[in-house]
Image 1 (tube, each protein chain N blue to C red):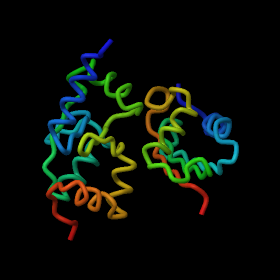
Image 2: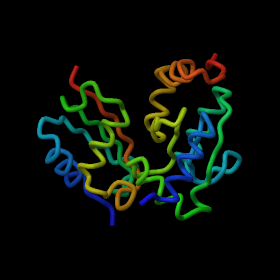
Image 3: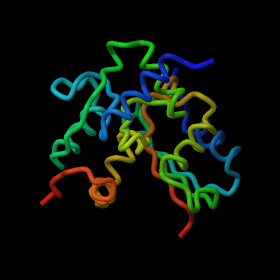
Length: 112
Length: 77
């Protein structure tokens, strides 16, 4: 039994190398944790695509089961869950996020 | 209904008996915590996997009763 929401999610993370499921939009984040990840990605000049879970109840619940991750935001790089706000912040501060982006061949600007 | 620090600590320790757990109530409202968990179980695991172990220990309360838990995990030095 395939789950249509899971298929939608899989399609999104396959289509976009950097995919952020968040509350609100990049322009108008509706939650501090989501805003934090948007800020980091913008700081690194990484092109990213977002999906607003507040406009899609099925997506909001489906994504948590899909990834076995209980909270939003969720950042995916090349189809892989990198984490929520905590992990992305930690990786950004330690430089691991820039390294991961380089490894995955994703254009970005190192935080000067 | 928020969660008490002792309850969070007990749940984590039930799943990770060797864990060293420190929890801070960030906002004083019982709803926004920062926790650091050190356990041998985390050795060699990605951060996502480490956090998933802690979330599983919290038996579904994460994201529901417990709105915000800033989590830091690591194996012992």
